[in-house]
Image (cartoon, rainbow, N blue to C red; front, side, top):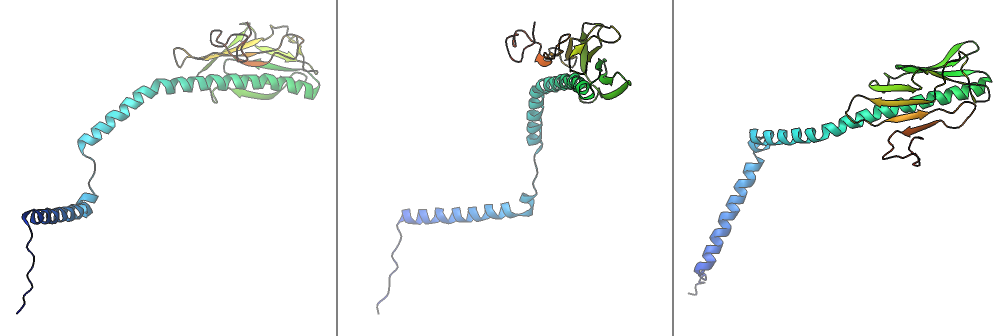
Length: 212
């Protein structure tokens, strides 16, 4: 009777087969452990939370000064742009009405006033969009500039000094950006400009710089 003999494995083959079997068993156990409810609901450890919190605080410490400067410069620009808008609106209303209109500046905001009635055409409060902005008139005792029906700067009806410039800054940061609104000279129509008051970075020859 012929009997089929199973070939015997050499020792190295048996060792490899045993290793493969143990790896497969270990892999199946690991997959079962990962798929278990306890593994799926596992949260962060205390050490992981402390490390994440430390990184967050470090990033906030780096970003806080830059964010504060950004907010300060935004308020300065808002106040300066709104002031320029008011001056231009006063000029446009004077042409539209063919009459005298004046722009009146205060530390808290501004008004555009039609002089014949008189009546307030529009107004703005700096507390809206720029509550920490600091506004200063040039000359220091000037508060208004007047326009006639041609849009030309005219002498103020009350003979007060004509407003020629408005400087805007803030006290939010130690080194804030400074911006200015330049108002046209007496009898002129040009010269209304928003500029950055920094002669070092933006000299008078720079398009964004203020005239001397």
